[in-house]
Image 1: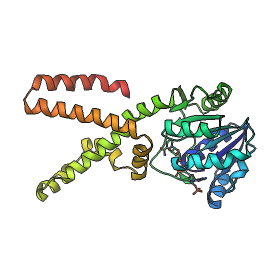
Image 2: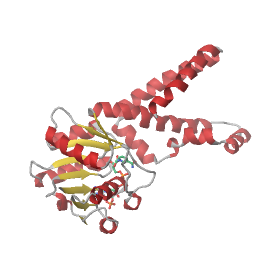
Image 3: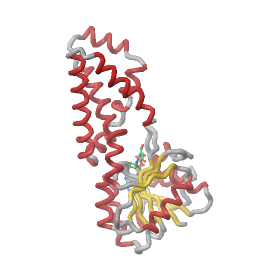
Image 4: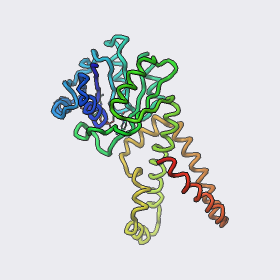
Amino acid sequence: MNIGIVGLGLIGGSLGLDLKALNEHTITGVSRQSSTCQRAIQRGAVDDAHPDLMAVTSADIIFICTPIASIIPTLQKLVPHLPPTTIVTDVGSVKASVVHSAESVWANFVGGHPMAGTAESGIEAALTGLFVDRPYVITPTQSTPSTSVSVLETLVRSLKSNLYICAPEDHDRAVAWISHLPVMVSSSLITSCLDEPNQDVFQLAQALASSGFRDTSRVGGGNPELGVMMARYNKCEVVRSLKTYQAELSKLTQLIETENWPALEAVLQQTQQTRPQFL
Ligand code: NAP
């Protein structure tokens, strides 16, 4: 197949590396900077790459791998130049808002989200095998052409990813629980600690912080742009999950205030038993 990749960063570059390694496809990349394009060619992520978006208009399938805010503007620039057979997909971490806007612009659009990444970004961060054994969620709607879903499914399976197919809204609600809510919770843990008014105690806490704090604060100490992106593009589901979390925190607070130790133990037993179901 002729495959186009727009946005040669961590995700676009990694997709290129693995799709090209199959020796079944011709891969053309687009990225704004010529230096990114040259590096993607050198790294073997693409056969050819250009800063001009028109370079991918003859592809059979185009992966838009730009930051979320640029997905729809990129699609809008592409569509006047595409035949109706061209499948366009994206890799954005939030799906409902992207998919519904995209399919109003291009009927042959299939939403996707490869759930793999690192803390790094850009073409140098691209990794071979990034998607192996990781979830790749495809989010068709009732109007998505089933043949196009099948084409993307075949490519995803060739990456050795674990394929999931669900509605965009279900994807966004699920990732709110396991990805977006943890970022907000972890951030508020850190800001709560910053509220300690006694400087001696504050410094002691900093000195004593160890593995428990490292585990629970990790995602709150990550890239702020990503956190804002989650809240901005998945606002309803992030707010819903935060409200449920607030209610659960209030219940725990009340159990402790009323010294209801058996009930507190029952909650902690339940969470101890059910945590493995998520991991
Ligand atoms: P990234 O490493 O920053 O890569 C994005 C690349 O896109 C940049 O290197 C940039 O290179 C290029 N770019 C930016 N705007 C562009 C535009 N308008 N047209 C063409 N190229 C453009 O970011 P990423 O982590 O790969 O994320 C890309 C997408 O993947 C996002 O939508 C994100 O939601 C999704 N995603 C990310 C992760 C993750 O863990 N990072 C996981 C799954 C999905 P130039 O400067 O050369 O243009």
